Length: 129
Image (cartoon, rainbow, N blue to C red; front, side, top):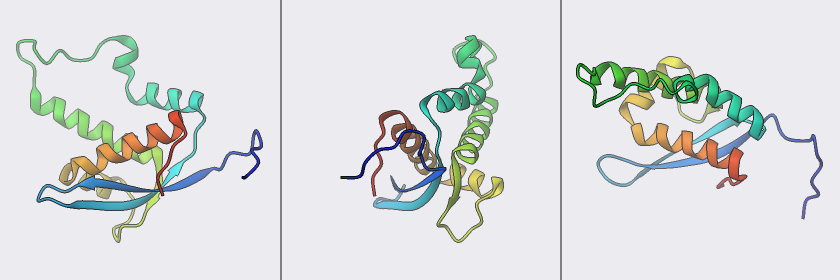
């Protein structure tokens, strides 16, 4: 069994992400996550989702709520989340904002799986190989 050493955490770690495809079956990709401590992860999330901290999230039941604008904001936040959490992937397309946005828009289950896997790995300390 490996011996733990405090202060010796990796800078990054790789993880295979599996997600359901719209037509059935599963897709997968391997990403290289940026390692963060729990405190660093909390600060990262606070920067991505300031309206949660301040309690100013839009009310989707309010008159005049713009669902299309809210969906665009959520897509952009997902892209920023992945760009901040992931250093690279094993797809043929380069890991950049344009391709992360394509992945998030075309395969929402993939972006949700990446976000959840990152949270699980950092908060609960679990990863799947």
